[in-house]
Amino acid sequence: MHHQFLPAAQLSSSTDYASLRHSTLALDRGTLDYPVLRVIREELDALAARKYDVILDYGAGNSPYRPLFQCNRYITADIQQNAAASIDIVLDECGISLPNASVDLALCIFVLEHVPDYRAVIADLVRVLKPSGVLFIAVPHLSREHETPNDFLRFTSFMAERMVPGCIAIKIRKAGNAWHAALSLLCEMHIKTGERPSGGLVSRIMLRLVSAAAPLLNVTLFSSPPQPDDGVFTSLVMTAVKPGPGGAGVSAASGNAK
Image (tube, rainbow, N blue to C red):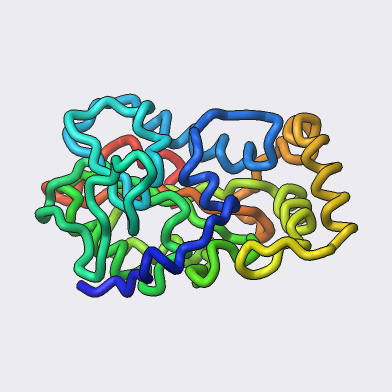
């Protein structure tokens, strides 16, 4: 299975969505990432209510989600080794070097937008899931180009409903309301392709003001979550279950399923 991964040398040092994937999972109301991280944390906490045998963190970075889970084996995979040399599987065009039906829970958080063939990645993740295994995905809906040149896709809720063929009990949540999406984009107008800051004075001033006001914004303008029928939001968070014997799933992903 060919994933068309790009050479590690082409990866940038972006701190945009990569910061969500590679930083700690601390929930800080003083940051602009809080409305999205809050939804991710709520869903991961629900999944962490049980113990797993094997967990795969695909696009793991420095594995910020590892402390949330109890498991016998936590496998990390990424396109390049991290500074701590803690990546178990360095991904290449051959895909995930794990046997079929060997993983209980797979995490794929802000990764798919950076892969040219996201369908192949999802198919490989579903392949390694055990029957009744859970796949957790987070992807951007509205954001600037980031981690260029490895930035290929944005996802809608309608696309999310169809992106995990063969899975059941698909639960989709929108994260970051219209205010959050709009102000996040406006604050990054001065960042050019390749994470190069420009001389955009207005955007820089707005970034400073919005960042300073983040604690207040997160409990006022940003506090209302997007509704299922809202068309303007920041990110999508999705949980899907691979059918088990008789087509059964597990309860972790059954609530509010679409």
